[in-house]
Image 1 (cartoon, rainbow, N blue to C red):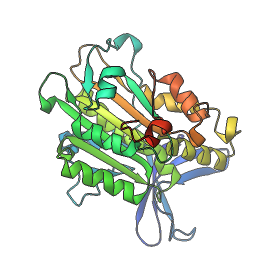
Image 2: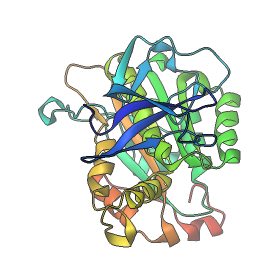
Image 3: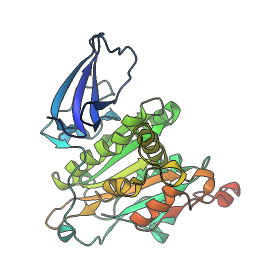
Length: 320
């Protein structure tokens, strides 16, 4: 009596509870992905509790100004979020008829974006980068300086998700947003490179669940910054391989296109709702190859692309 992707609680002999979910079921066996560290877990003394529901995230107005890990747990030393309601992290698809036409844009403070490829409210715009290019700096500057073209600053919020980032990058994101005063209007989700790859697949879903609550229930204009989607796709390949799924191009699963769409299509404007959800997804192109499956599929789903130039970066032009 369980379903795929149902949440479970795994308690080891050490008494520590770990979050997990059901990854596969057949006639005899159930495979569970443990979303936290498995150190100290042994078959003997391990108890699995079935929660009989998908993974949920407790959301409330207190999301802003807080720092979470990749599975929505508070890691800033403060109290837990006073949850007004629980939402399923996979969200619900937007009815295409309910979508309103995006008409206004968000000022990023980066003049090359605002003038040449503006970030339209309710759209999803990816930023294609490469190893060593200043996409982290650009992401922090946008998070620090972005604002509504017209409207109250209280109507604007940012959800920033670091996916598979090194510890120093995570500290850079947190410190920069704190020092710039942007953290008070930001919900920051940090999934470290040392965290499990299964947890990496959930980080953008927890972040987008928070963004949907802020946008469609509290009426805010929300900008979601996701970095780095390449780490997400690499984790998707790793988890798919461990399940024995048939690989497609360069070893990535054949379902990667639809999987990415379940994230990107959560952006939008809804008729009769004041708030909007806008996405800026950052990815690094392996070997600067824009035809690689990750940027290739991302470009099909999103509205145009911003591409950072290594040649401009070498010439000292910022942003490149």
